[in-house]
Length: 203
Image (cartoon, rainbow, N blue to C red; front, side, top):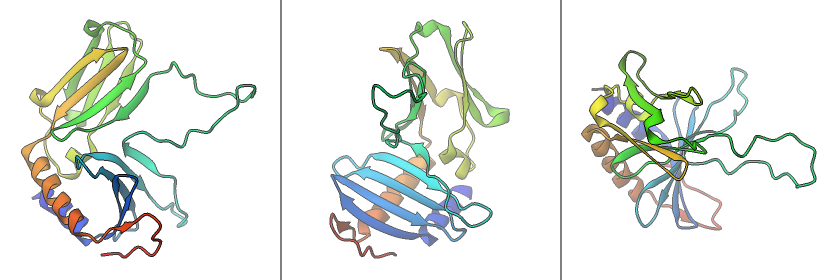
């Protein structure tokens, strides 16, 4: 079963835990050299951040790629700077999950809800967002579903719109919920070092 194979890959990875700033931070090093970093809220156990890093073909460390959460690495530019920067009114696409749903928030979309069409495209294993006024189009996959080789279900998809933000939700399949519960139990067993400890032990 594909879900089990992903669980096995997680179990075989080297994991380092750090408790810091109200979060449980986990670093995974996989046998193929890929790295994954996750952050969980200590009180709610909700996943706040998941990001990946791959080595280049020459073995150099690549940049971290966000899968869940918002990157805080935007450069700080002074107000009198002539540097061109991204327009802050452009749509911003962020994944922010809940316990029971995969969820994406797209900010800066000031259109009524009936303009939006959100649907599953099974042949491409992705979700598509588009507007009837042709102002916005987005196609994205759910890596968690792909890693576990589970089908995309139209009935699991829903969306709402308020305050210029489109919120797309996809109900987590029971296989994913079980996997996440098992993983969380394993992560809580890790001896996490607290802030200030540098010598992190791996498992």
